[in-house]
Amino acid sequence: MDNKPKSLTKVEIKEIAAIEDIQQMWGAADTTEMEETLNKMVYAVKFDYHSGSPGYVGDYFILQGDALGEGALELIRNEDRKIVLIDHRAL
Image 1: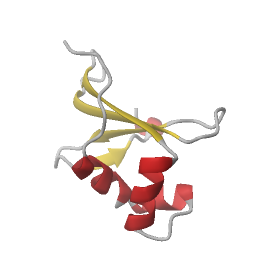
Image 2: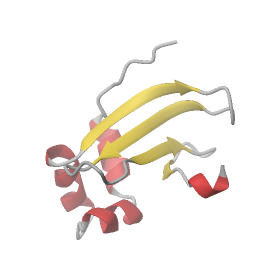
Image 3: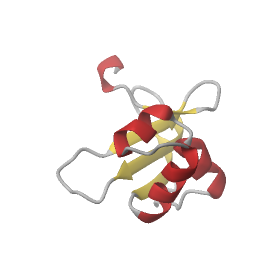
């Protein structure tokens, strides 16, 4: 198991930047502005994740803004391989 953090690829940054909820959270006007924000103001990391429960195996992303104390965002890939925010209420 490789539990070391990895940098996001350009494709992953574009995919995350296209998520409207994330654009709204950071006040970005569009995908291009959100890409710039992700590249300059957001700490972003990806893990090859293997959980014991609830049984997720795959990409696990963490995004943290430049202000500590505000919760980090967690994202995974859904069944369709699309990056989505984790809804902790559903766990």
